[in-house]
Length: 314
Image (cartoon, rainbow, N blue to C red; front, side):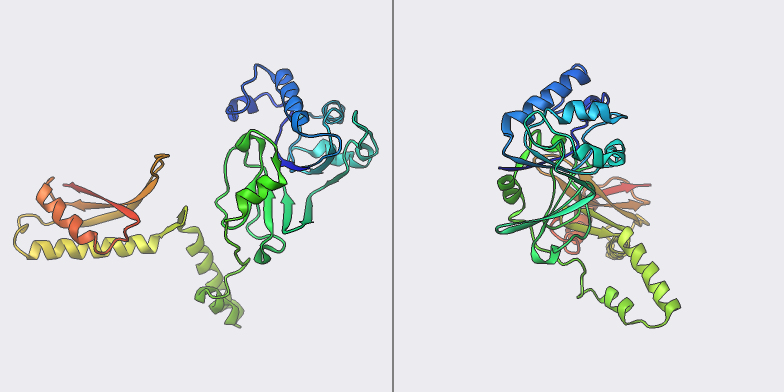
């Protein structure tokens, strides 16, 4: 069998506090023993484990050896940001033998690319926005984020222990990623990117690059929804025109109101997470009739995937 894991953080006292879901331990001694027990309950000496980094927080390799020699299987380590003691002595460590007869580490490196029947896998401690053979369906496995999932789209998966509470098998990885989309590492149909590609003047290209970087970083990504500042500005202007139309109609002529702000809010209710576009109309008292009129008109311009929230205030 082939397994994947990451960020076990042996000897790390504070990880019990930072990521408590699967670390209900009284101290690091108990944590170390339970993690070894968990590993060996599924991994045999004949199995292979690809460990994607941050094996230990110990400052010296003596403690690393004490733990690693007790872990079953052929152990391949992808170096994480806390594995500097291992990196500094990797040749020495790879010559040692474990209790099960295998090498202490079969290999120690920063990155590895694997090919299995039906699936290719890129391994890195850190999540990547683009990876080897991504455009051909290769899967990106990483750690580093503990119990969080990266917002990078495509066939990418955090295999960290603190996210899953277990080691993942190759079948698990395939199951998690099989329905995820195969995405190109660059969007050749994006007109903005094509404009940069076609621009031959260095200074003009520099300006386009800066504009594109600003556009990318001004976007708020939640799931499959993208709301940029430009879009919110457009909604605010349209809402302001709606307010003017309602005033001009005569029914609400007592109010000199307009849309002063359009923002978004993310509601993380686990059963029904959603995004609201929030419109603030100034110079108006709370008025249910006015609010209803505004909502009916705003609903025509705001896509259905967004909720609408209206605030009326002086």
